Amino acid sequence: MTNSGSYSSLSATNNIQIPIKESEQIQQFHNYKKEEQKKEEQEEVYENEYSDLEYGTWIFDFFELPEHDFFCLVDDDYIYDNFNLVGIREQVDYYEHAFQVMMDWERTNLGILQEEDIPLIEKAAVHLYGLIHARYILTEKGQQKMIKKFKNYEFGECPRDLCNKYPLLPISLHDKINEVTYFF
Image (cartoon, rainbow, N blue to C red; front, side, top):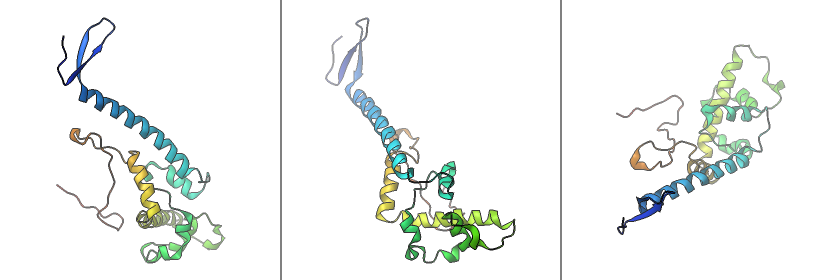
């Protein structure tokens, strides 16, 4: 069997030559290398970004939940800078309590709370962190973290064949919680 210009041949153990397009070989090699690099980068990012979290803190518990995979860790310096929190207080119920829960401050300042208020404060803390995160990812550091997550395929990959498993990026068309737009 002779090879045409666009084919190369592989020898099997029984000396049968199987024609395979060179472009397919190259694509297979690149896909393999991409997957290996993606695995290494995911391990590195996970170790670097989340290694500073203390076990048992609110933020550690927040990132342990699978529905929070799209978030990146917001630097404490960013959270403690009041300039970055301008306008958020009005959007979050129980803001003071939620901030204290989120930052794991002593709960002595929470005052006397009703038992039914605690789940509402936890929900408010999640909402607060989401609003802070939305602002944080617009900063240079936040964008770098999100780019790493994007390049590591942490948001998934496109299932369409023509996309060649291109990484996905989550978006929202609204800056208010629970607002959804559907496209048909």
